[in-house]
Length: 254
Image 1: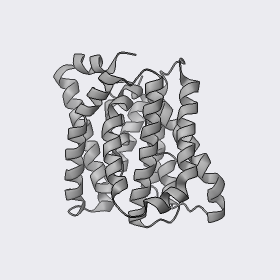
Image 2: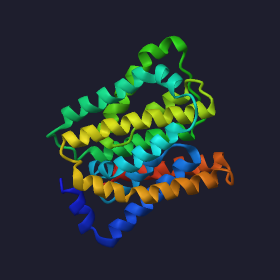
Image 3: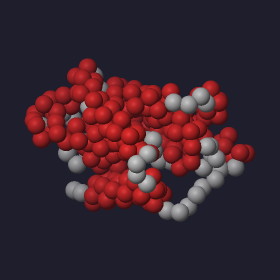
Image 4: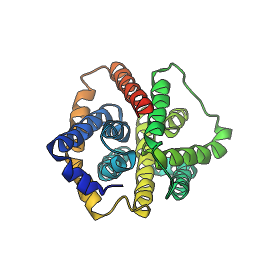
């Protein structure tokens, strides 16, 4: 794989604009609905680069915005106690899949990303509302976490099946937003470790990722302003429809 910093530099103005626009749009989506920064940024960037390169660019913007989201609300300890087995599963699944994938052919990763985005879009656009009984959460949490981690390692996207699972727990709106921030933070840390171990994230890549932070933060602030001025339902439908189109493109490309 090309060094991300060199790839970013050699791409010139066009790639720099794509990165800025991708993270600006991703931050905007996250500001409005509380999620979507990794999904949107990796989906858009994967049109021009491998998912692993896009994931390396994602690390710092994702970490900063997720900690920002996690810090909002006063239910951190409660959610950590309730979700810790899922979080452990996320880390274990990410690292186990990373070890298994190391040195293997990953040309299929773009197609896997497309499939994951299509599933996510279908769930988001459907009227299905899942519910996880309390007695099932003891085993479901680690399983969901490990599955999410494996998908994260392969595609860089950490929403499936973690987000539908969290939505099925009956959390109130503020708890759900904070829970997603907690899960995404754990996923970002695990993904960073995976990329560092695979030699895909070093000092140069960290600097390139840092450059993507500003448009992500500006987009997130714009999204928070927009949240009170647009229909959340219409915005979510447009978001999932767009994710579905990108997913189909990545699944069929090549």
